[in-house]
Length: 345
Image (cartoon, rainbow, N blue to C red; front, side):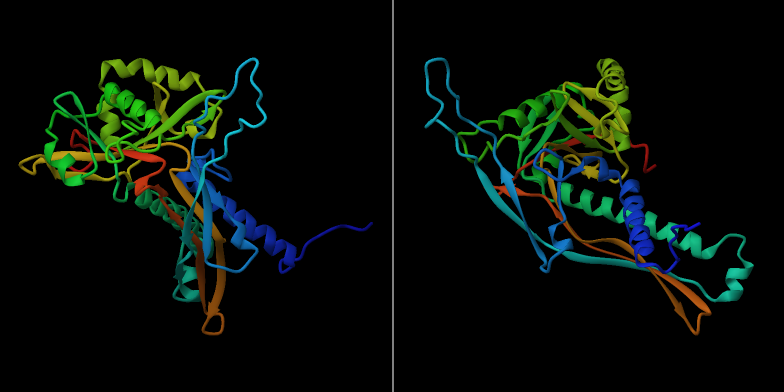
């Protein structure tokens, strides 16, 4: 009887192993749930340079259609609206890390398999690296910042202005989330090039429009103590629970899916006197970030000193950044709020 098998060093075996490594790494990354290969995802990904040479990837940034369309008795032909798209490019970067043991005797002494743990550790590090790159990009120099001052919804493009005005009572509220969403949908005063901007495009889930709000756990704690928010938490368990973007979310408030993550930035020196504990939040719409793959994550196994020492190296070629249009963030706006100081006491 003939049996199909693959040797350990078979080329196809290695290809499958590399693909599984990539899937495991990306699965562990928090931002994976937001990634997709078209304009409708929060993080628009491209992998075209995996099969070709080059270090620069160009994304098309699509604007919303603005025309009124036609009604009965009008001819559609000749009244079409041209898609408005703009180019956004980013250059690939190489990221690597490695681990190496001290020899066969150390592997013998250990109560666990050093080789196996080294591989797992690098997968975890790779997932954290993907997330760190995404969080750094989405939080970098926001061009529009909302913040509450004594219950008043305020906007600025200057980080120093926003943080200095915040008092200890200016914490996140459902009202702040709602007002931020309204501004994101409308673009504010779009006729004013200084105060307005291109409206954020929401993502669609089962025919409904959603944005995603990323907050620090301290901010989520403040939100949970708000009585108005209790019903929002119940709604989050009922609506869209099978869609990946709801995975790990705490609630849905007024079409905004609220996620918490410890990598969202916090501060202790906000306010006029530099004593207010604060936190940066981000409201994300479609194409908030663009991610390009050059080479997907891969682990390489090496031996040193005639096989005495074992080493594992992890590497990927990729890039991520925040697209802009007319010098303003295209798919996201920031929310700066005070917070109850819990995580850093």
